[in-house]
Amino acid sequence: MAAEALVRGGAQVDVYDAMPSVARKFLLAGKGGLNLTHSEPFTAFLSRYRVRAGALAPMLGAFGPDALRAWVHDLGIATFIGTSGRVFPSGMKAAPLLRAWLHRLRASGVHFHVRHCWRGWDRSGALRLDTPQGERFVRPDAVVLALGGASWARLGSDGAWVGVLAARGVPVAPLQPANCGFEAQWSEHFRERFAGQPVKSVEATFIDPRSTRWRQQGEFVVNRYGVEGSLIYALSAQLRDAIAATGEARIELDLKPGWSLERLASELAKPRGGRSLANHLRARAGIEGVKAGLLRELASREDLAHSARLAAAIKTLTLRLVAPRPIDEAISSAGGIRFEALDERLMIRSLPGVFCAGEMLDWEAPTGGYLLTACLASGRAAGLGAVAWLEESG
Ligand SMILES: Cc1cc2nc3c(=O)[nH]c(=O)nc-3n(C[C@H](O)[C@H](O)[C@H](O)COP(=O)(O)OP(=O)(O)OC[C@H]3O[C@@H](n4cnc5c(N)ncnc54)[C@H](O)[C@@H]3O)c2cc1C
Image (cartoon, rainbow, N blue to C red; front, side, top):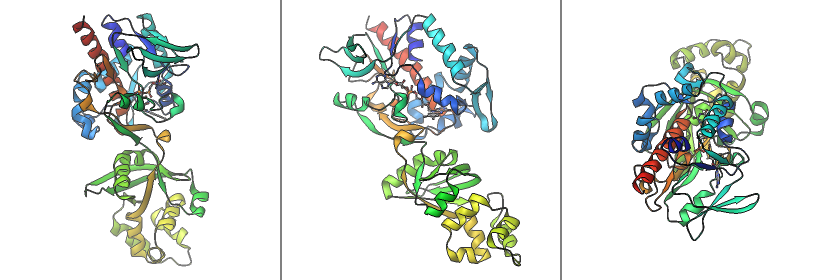
């Protein structure tokens, strides 16, 4: 996006990427359907960026969900709004969009240089680039850094830039996992039996250390180490911060969100006859499979033995999470270059002519298209900022 803004602004643009091809994470995002943005009203959309909504507002105001969709359409790719308001390209693939985009960029004069890994600056201020042919030095009039966060390092964004910029005195908030899974202490039996299974239609409530209550309905997946999936990702910033502060995060699961406690209790109070607890739960409340497994794993013996307590356990089952999974496995990362270090054009104040964009900035957002929208909007803003700066500095 920065390259597009710069080349349209009349600059000669070279893109350097460490990997053998560009946009590998963008392509991977396409495997999950490439959720480009979200169609909810703009105020709600902006609120997803929580404490960084204010910092991102100018960029998202200039290039928000509608502008993003128009930009995709302009590349010859149709979009559609899925259930829950998420926006996808037709075909739900990243490759056709990327192909059209790269073609347009090349046609407008942008040069791509792959296997060029940026290592910082030499003493004279030139960019140091490691290439298969050895070190290369280039001295552009302006630079836009868009080096990503630190998740899925094998796709190219490894966060190595943090050390380079920190050494130049640029304030960087530590990179942390966002939209990530969490570890739970499953019994061996539960793990062997249920790892890999989705838990559908549950409601999770989390009360953070400041007593703010977060509630989210959705689904998650039990895996060998704990839990992951959209419901968990949606709460992951709050869960991660709570674990950092207190060593754990307890979420309360409602395994039967459509039913009141009274209805559940009255169904479960009906005589069991000769039925096992498993059959009784299935017949009376439709609780079976992994949900029944979670109940046995997390509820006490006493809860399982009394119908009223059993109903209460189904409505408020406590799951204790002890650690976020490593950043390399996360969908995205939190932390990055602090906005205080940047001017309104996304130029690093202490490094004139160096602009930054994308996930390497200090913001985070849930899944739902918010990540790509803010990356593209900030890329465009940094590119336009660089054009303006180049014009001013002659
Ligand atoms: C599995 C998965 C699915 C996702 N799905 C979605 C989705 O559906 N919707 C959504 O909104 N978001 C999604 N995301 C998140 C989204 O892909 C990222 O937020 C986005 O790609 C970040 O863009 P970026 O340009 O800031 O960084 P990146 O896409 O990470 O690109 C950074 C680039 O910089 C290069 N680089 C890094 N360091 C150097 C260096 N030193 N020298 C040279 N080059 C370097 C890398 O090779 C890379 O090409 C998903 C992420 C993952 C992992």
